[in-house]
Image (cartoon, rainbow, N blue to C red; front, top):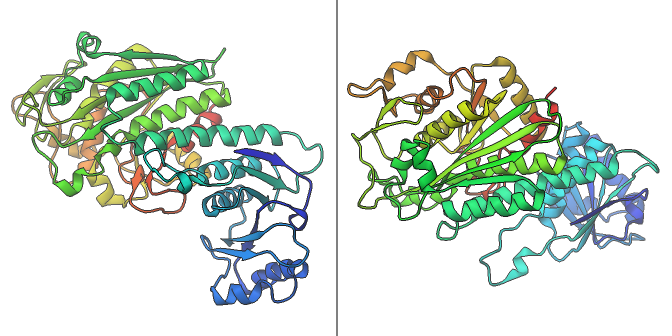
Length: 489
């Protein structure tokens, strides 16, 4: 998408569709509609707004045929409620107009404020709103969306606005890359092809990308990852992408769960629970998206993405409940339920990353537990860490990006649920506190590293659009991770 700046006003725009923010409240709504009708003519907007019960509330949209001397074909009124944050409003406007446009090829946005922050947000919203996954659609008309957008009211000679457009697009491109991975069907996206996708994108950005095959994984002693892979006909992969600028401020390692399909192993999932299990690699998609965004933005932080990828299938050699395996770190683990495979994969990868990369911060993304969705619902992720400063910084970054996290307790009293009578650990606890005991299991493999676990099982893949989340793969976590990196000192 081509995004540009203009000093012009909305009533002079020649774009196919022009987006205008409208606040809620009787007085503010009347003022906003009156301002529009002063140009388009009395009775051109207010009656339709009344008929459609458009009140300027958040998520409300009203598409109006332009009237009077307006050169644009359509006006899109975007409800913003009581929101006063110009950055959030700009994102909503960009996302709204790109989401709703079909026959319209060009758009213009009247932003409440034209600053680098709002321009970046609008650009990001435009690119994310224009996202369509149509690779397997014969009728490509469903992919139609705007090809160009103009951000209006830009002060002449204002600094930082052009680079803000580039930044917004860079983040959105990385989010949409992650969405594509999550939406891809499992017959096409498996550990091998996921590794190829990471390699292709790394080459485009000039990044180092190392891929481990099964033989290398065996040499590294990642027996938990290999156990999960035993029932699959497709080999596992470990993917390691590195972005390293000169004189980096910090080293941050992101680790991702890459289960390209999870049938549950021998503890097989019900059919209804299995149909969307292509999304079980959303943690790896977010992890890769973050490192690619860091490279696009040229952030002064060394960023690593490490992904453990496999399928969890039911083949003749599949691992069993009751099996015991020795982890890379050395602890023995008794398998209780083969459908709790993600923590086994992560345990070996986290252990390797701690020992070999020695990060300042290590953060993992994983669609780890259904218990997390039971606790927090489908639109919020769980955040686990013992480090208060890290938690505060990440929650602040999430707030700025409109992604929802909730800090959960690493309750030490539940650690006893992981005791095994025959091994060092059981890999799951019991029925209660399932998301917490999963995090406690991972904690066994991170030593003293400043570490955070993000269980994104809910918002990584949703069955209908909600707020900033599109239906299907959402790319959840990428934007927050990038903002966190940008704030590091």
